Length: 418
Image (cartoon, rainbow, N blue to C red; front, side, top):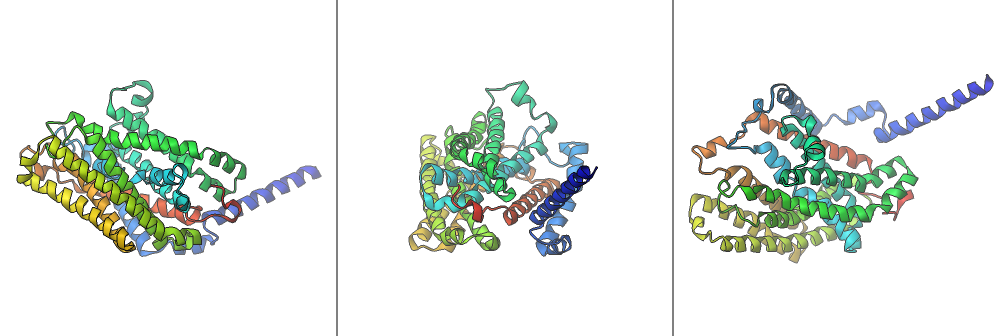
């Protein structure tokens, strides 16, 4: 009897210690009361308001159907929900593979402190991209069906679905060492780190194919997308724009970490942020020059010069000159003069240009010849609310992880292990 009592007491003591340890991890060393008080900030209150307003909209979507919250039709299949959630935002989320490949595959050792924040941004981005897709699908619980049961190997959407699924898995495994360090699971951590290089190679392949596949989706729409935006080279154009957009987004993630999560950054991260910004800025500038040249060559190859002197032609020039050429030049000047602020502004400008390009292809120039086209593409308020809520939730999850996990710092017992 006494042995049973001792075992029970030891078990209770162990579970009590685990509870204290876990709560300390969860609430960052604060008491529940102090942690609750720390959540009362203007940003959190605004985020709560957005999420509360969006709750009935999401309820309508899943009880009354997608048509109750968006204006999708055969003429306008892509609304702002998927135009942002899949096409416009995913080029940014290639940041993980760009920075990880630079460090692990190309030997750029100075990029090591920044790999995890880039992988985190990419991982969350792809997870939320899949969430946008689940919102848009008529029967989201059957998403496995076309992937596992009724194979459609000739469908680009089939490839996109598998790319996203596999890439999310790869990035979760890439980021797992940070989680295991947070939990102090040393054996699993060694196993996860040993897989890193293979995962990076797989991630580079998947992300490369996926970004071009998004452009390939529109190869079957030559009569629907405006001729200035349609081209047989869309897969190449989508991939090349994703390269500089990913670099720009990685650069902005580092800025966000330094500006808003400085307390979680170690000295190595803070000291290397400026050099990384200039390095990624230089890479983004070069990639933009390539993309700009490809756009001009595509224009010449398809002989679309005459269309430049039309209303849509003027809009095309706004995109090409205003949102590609200008940030490209700003990148060049910023890197040349080592103006960190200018490089960061150019990165934000370049990302905005890619978003504009995707929205142009998906919405603004899609079935551009239909009557009252510009009026028909105005998204309903409910769709905008859903997008705003999803972005807000993504930011909150990113902040939650950044404040807890060793993303921008190395824990003492794990220095040099990745």
